[in-house]
Figure 1 (tube, rainbow, N blue to C red):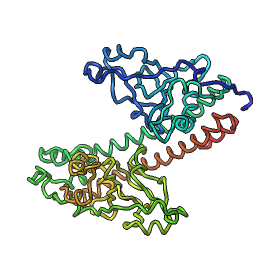
Figure 2: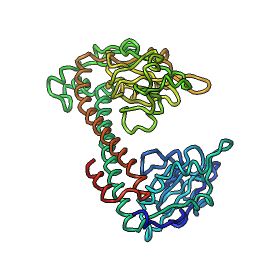
Figure 3: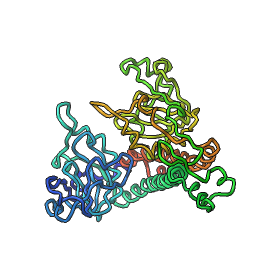
Figure 4: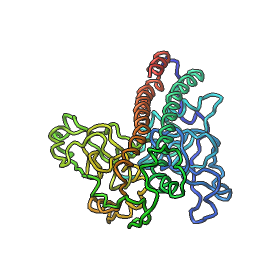
Length: 434
C-alpha cells in the first residue's frame, strides 16, 4: 500500500495561515464572539479545542487576514511546539500557530489532522535548539515533506481513527456528567444543606426516602463556619484526614529506578488527565528507590492533591503508588474518606489555595493544610454519601480505563496507518476488537 502514496509538502495540502495577536493595549479588541486560539488552549490528547479568549469585530479588523474558516492548527513556537488540533469553525490564532486550511477537494480533513498529530516529535525536533526558544517558521513549516495516499484511502484512515476518538470523547463526556452529578449531590447535602432546610420547613427532602431523611437534623446551629446542621462538628482537616507527603530519589542513580517495579507519581501525571482518576504513572521506582521515599507505597484509593506548580490537581489512585514532594496525599484510612475529600477539595479549592505561600512558586504545605476547618457530618451521613458516590465513581473509573485503552490503540495504529505500514483491513480488525 505504501508504494502508492505520493510524496508532497505540507503547503500542497492547502493554504497555510500564520496567526497574529491584536494589540493587547486596546480593551476594545477582546471579549467578543470570535474565538482566539493560543497554544495554551491546545491540550494533548484532545482533538478539538475551546479558545479561552475571544475577539470583538474591532479586534478582528486588525487581524482579518488571519481568520480561518476551518482546518488543522499546529503550534510552531515554544515548548508546546508540534501540538495539533482540528478547527471546525471560524477561528483566529496567535502568531505561534500555523493553520492549514485544507483543500478538501483533494485531501481529507480528518486524515490531515492525524497526519500532523503523528508528526509532533518531528516538528519539535526540527525547531529545537539548545540556545533559543524552539521555532518552526512558516517557510520551514510549509516545506516539511509528507506522503499521502489517494483521497479514498485518506477518508478510510481518517474515519477509522475518528471512530476511536469519538468513542473516547463519548466516554469522557459521560464521565464529566457523572462527576458533575456527584459534585451536585455533595453541594446539596454538605454546602447548601438542602435536606436540613426541607425538614426545617416541614417538607420531605427531595429524592430521599424516610430512612435517608432521618439521617439529617431539622435545625441549624452556629459554628466558626457559620450556620451548620445541628449536631455536625467543625474540626481541623488534620483531625479527620491522615495526610502524607513524598520524595524523589536521586534521579542520577539508576539503581533507584531500575528495575522499574513500583508506580511513582509527580503532579505531571495529573496535568493531562481527563477525570479525577490516576491509573498509572510515567515513571516507576526500584525497590531500592521506593525505600528512599519516606511515605512508602500508598494504597490504592488514596486521594492525591498537587500542592505546588500548580496547586489543585486532584485524583484518586487506582493502584498502590509512591509520590514525590509535590503532593499532599489523603489516605483511605482517614475518618473522612478520599471520595468525600475529593469533592470537598473541589468545593473549597480557592480557600485551600489561599493558605499557600512561597517566593519562587506558591505551595501549600501539610502544615498549612491540616488546620483548615472542615465540616464533619455524622458517620451515617458520610457512609450514605460514599455508598451513592462510589457507584457513580466506579462507573467513571471503568469509563476512564476504557478511554485510555482506546487511546493506546489509537496511538499504536496512528503512525502505522499514516506511514502506510499497516494495511487497512488489519487496522479495521484491530479497531473492531477494541
